Image 1 (cartoon, rainbow over the protein chains, first blue to last red):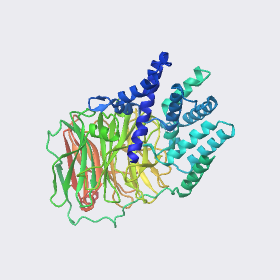
Image 2 (cartoon, rainbow over the protein chains, first blue to last red):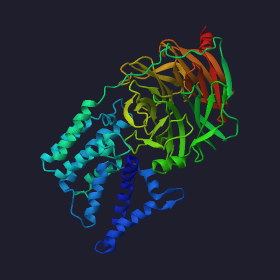
Image 3 (tube, helix red, strand yellow):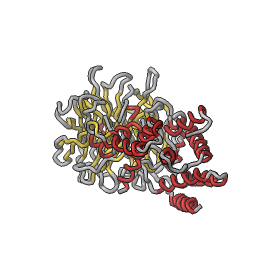
Length: 194
Length: 374
């Protein structure tokens, strides 16, 4: 059962990526009735489409890997909003998450390449220390009224404790290179994100 | 606020139960069953006939609970080809014969079981766990070269006849790319497995993963840094002391085998030092044989892999003495990727790639080693 749930979360990233691509391509038809169903159904159809031995979803997952929980939450919330739903994560909370992810990425990625003996990725295996730090960040977000950000962080932490992803490292629940690069680019080139 | 409190409770609970880093399990000479034969024994042979696959490489061994030895290696049209499959064979310790070669896993099965496209397979490493199970860690690639590798794991409860579905180990935050295995694992006192791995994605350095018997990563320690130390062979010399030797893949002209040591259970490692042994950018195999004695199989040449030798150290891996030249061919020949174990009956088994065509098997006993030292 756990393996099945892990696979679902693994494929969720591929589905959300394709859905956003569909939503972007079909953005002129946003008001049309077929828009919503196409943005949901077309990616699902594409993902289960077999190409040789593997499905499109398996090819995508082979290349993209696992997206972090925070990426899934953000992509899910934005897709929901694009399909006419309520905005689940306000822009202030997104900005908070953006700063947190960029800070984490700057600390994490250069040193994981083996420049020094220090490996911040190991910190994510220490099950007590890293989650407590996450809670402090969530409390900080709650304190400055970034409640959606706090909720996303706490939900990520709870899913980490449930070992819902393949990874056993908290860093992999919080950020991935795609989210880090996207947030960096959006910080540099646009005033507003998403 | 309820969710914050819930997360706080869970995290504090996990913090309280988080164990102290476990000690290494170091088999003392008294725990090892001594091979009954007191006269020196040294026998050479091959695991399989030539031609099963055009190319073979990267053999690995583990001792089974029934006293036999299981071997695995990869074979296909060439290294890195899409038809590469991991094969295995069982050595009957009583009859001194190898059983039939059988396929263990291929890229398609790995891909289907891990839910992702897998194009090619690479180095396998076998290990036995404290529950009598056999694990196989192996490298896979979805796209690109070895720098884009990941590690997978399968486990068998019947000595390698059948295997549970594959799972992928997540070992790197950069799309889980660039981690490979080559060398023999070691054991920790809590039953977890210490798996020496190395990174080849931008940096080239060694790490020690701590993995449970089901293949879940529990911890990771970096044992070197930079761009020249790969394929660490890590062995314990005590509860808290371990030594690691590396393949030197640096740019320098006169490459030497690299060494480091840990005195705190692998938490921290000394700076790399160079041994007085050449490293022609080739893998080494290391085995503790009691006390501070270590046995090393390596390519004893500055360039090329035509010479494969056994060396012994009696001071924890600082000073080495060649005790036997196993192979010394022409410069075009290649005898590489040695793997050493001591089986449960006390016999030492060495396998290596013989000219990429066959996996060669050599076994010897402690009396033979002592004779070579004298």
